[in-house]
Image (cartoon, rainbow over the protein chains, first blue to last red):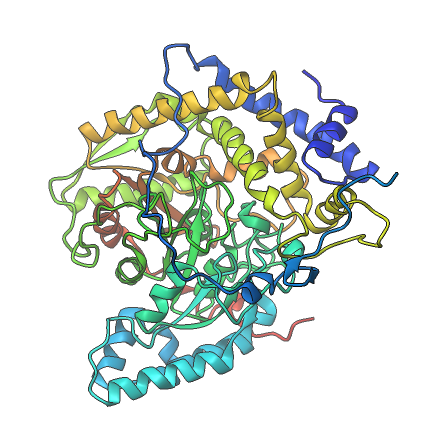
Amino acid sequence: MALSTDEVARLAALARVDLSPEELAKLAPQLDVILDAVARVSEIAGDDIKPSSHAFEITNVFRPDEVRPSISQEAALSGAPAEEDGKFRVPRILEED
Amino acid sequence: MNELLKLSAAEIGSKIAAGSLTSVEITKACFEQIHAVDAQVGAFLCLDEERALAAAAAIDARIAAGEKLGPLAGVPIGVKDIFCYQGLPTTCGSRILEGWMPPYNSTVVDRLLEAGLVIVGKLNMDEFAMGSSTETSGYQLTHNPWNLGYIPGGSSGGCAAALASYQVPLTLGTDTGGSIRQPASVTGVVGVKPTYGSNSRYGVLAMASSLDVPGPFARNARDAALLQEVISGHDPMDSTSLVSELPGLTDAVGKGVDGWKIGVVKEFGGDGYQPGVESAFKEALAKCERAGAEIVEVSCPHFDYALAAYYLIMPSEVSSNLARYDSVRYGIRVGDDGTRSMEEVMNLTRGAGFGEEVKRRIILGTYALSAGYYDAYYGSAQKVRTLIQQDFDAAFEKVDVLVSPTSPTVAWKLGERMDDPLAMYKADLCTIPSNMAGNSAASFPIGLSDGLPVGFQVMAPALADDRLYRVGAVLEEPLLDSLVGTSAWDALYEEAK
């Protein structure tokens, strides 16, 4: 299997990461080598083996649905790149007509 | 060097409690050492001198007033820049979080403060804990105190280098695939990856949540045990935090291994161990035998696949976890000129803010989770995870602990593996299985190979962390004693170029 620069560009777009042409040219062959090395997991992954998503069997952990103090709105906004009227300010999210 | 710096954390704590040393004295000595050597070592990303000295003075006042505090009250500590601590920036070694001030503390930091430890600053690391050399940090290189031209290991390289250059007696790191044990190994200190879930992840910036665990670094097993006892325990803020408690750890130090069965793992795959690593490892095994343990070889056939499975599971979790760095709630924002859309700004911010290794893993994870590849990659890796857990279960029916070299090689030269990701990844060959299974593991210093430290890894069942300390106390060597006074040591004090 060979991972093309086009495919890496598509994956980068899915992951919302801008890559320069130089980065694409460097990353594609590296990812190819890595994928080649990790593909061997399928050699021993038989149909009868249960997959583990975690180290231990854990179940949902619930807490009572009660109002509790939390950090203030001011503190929550303190690290934001932009804020307005006590809210996170973002660039436009809809296309202009 | 100030002689006070050679004291262990346990000695510092008991002297402070007894009134023969003040926390201010030892904290000042640490800052003097930091100012003398860290221009060369590069362990700290930021310092907190004023607040640390005030905290130290407050501890001294409480002791003078007759208050009984814990065994580490007044002891200085450095923490990896992955832990949220209000009042200092938390960057996780990434430019995308440059200058970010967290609005709350991580639980483990709160526990340090409650126990009276004095936090002196934040330590350098690979960006978002991705790396084995601390070279992927977006800020600076950290150098190995044994030879400044060599890597300090990673991702918690700052933690290891600060200890090995006597800047602080304790540090706190995190381990996802070996990020505590491997840097401990290559710098000649002790590093412990406790049982997954025994230390809270609340307020610890996430890399791969099913694998990440905070843990202690120290210069000896007893100090590491004391620190682990301070930070562990259930935390309702972390839904994967274990309710069960760890057995007594400081009590375990000195109990020995007489009558124990110690299993040497037969197959880790890879390219084998460096000869100097192998011979130091064998000498340490002989030491265990002399202490009354029986050494047996144990087969863990699926460990050979652990590295491959890890480099699917970890990037998959990374690609999901790092989606939060979207230029909205925290961190930098790039290219918001009033014309670009949210999506364009997000792409530009992440492109500019993340370094090469982080991008590599995000894309790898995106691929492993994408439609059409999920079963072959992520799905298969999860099955290998089950097989590794079964290997551990079977092994621990036969032996008390499993052992191996911590890393197949000693430290390598800075820059040597930066363009060969696979070679970099192999540094964690022996440490990854314990993250996949969640059991406890640690690295202890045992000897030198060509003047560079070799670490010995001990793996114990989940919640049997006490066994790590029992083995470690038997075989650890005070390697750092032999560093002080050498020409390598003198180089730490040279003015930065």
